Image (tube, rainbow over all chains, first blue to last red; front, side, top):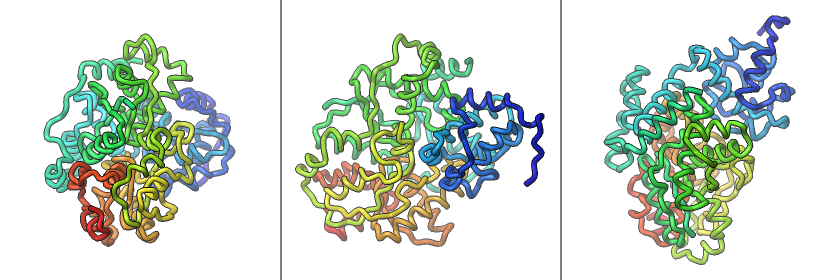
Length: 183
Length: 288
């Protein structure tokens, strides 16, 4: 891969944005690649975790935010645990996703973000996760209509799936969601 | 000992057996668990990848309710545990504390410490004490103890076991009479948060984990997280289909094996709710 790096592409503003959102000094990274060596999802990523950090250091905002990597990170914390420079990569990945959402960049892993959105909307509505509705809505929105539905009867029989949501503290939940969105 | 108990969403649905066995075991060990009133979701992964304030406010709301019961709150789900510990750390150091207090209308941050039940078991009750109460030996059943991620990582947050060579589950099953197998995949990720959105990735990761456990000679797995359990057990049939395997490895919660050793009946431990039944294995070993 050949990228042109000039004074224009190495904008420090993006670095500041990432550091502010994550609370992590990304220039501490010296590219040892230990994070990528231990990453369980690396095989599916378009850029390895250490490459994402390097690109972020160089201010390559568009490419980073459009990557599949930032959505595929499972948050397993292996990289964060092993980094010799205490770069909390899992926190940086969170920050990159948050920035991508804020700037309305289309997520390269559509279903991952779709799931997150539907998960939070059921929590907002009922106070707790309601799997039945969550999976139904996810399947319809993602187009994978029959995904996992054959598990439902077996789970119902074993009492491992609820038919009705457990409405809990709904007003307070609504206030919290509203309050955090307004910041 | 009286603790506030935060079950979390999974323990009231797909992991009902974890909730049942957790309560049964706590009772047998004279630990009083009082459910946090009006508890709500901790936000799990979707919250912290979407909005930092939301990911801290949701745990904090629950800690506020827990404070009415005890200064210590027990969780069994590794993912909830992680979210509460993250909140605890961030709110102690960060300037966002003031903003969060406004969002949930708080005067002070509740002083409640979150602990995983394994931590209580080892550091409060003590394994020796557990061993003294043993009524049934686990008769050399070979167990692969699977720690996954959030129970042990990152160590600054999870705090109670080694992130690379964890041993708490191994030590526990050993005193119960089981044989923990040595296997390198004990702390590999199962892909939890991608379970619905990128099931293909999860199937690859869990296939590798089950393969490694199986090669190490394990007859079953033991876990301390409902998401690990769902990926390894609920999806075992899918793994077999995709990778042409014939895994039939029961995935127990540590509370279920502990419960059996304490002489609690199988039904109270929710063992009948398993998709990959452990009945055959337990019968074969002569564990009632």
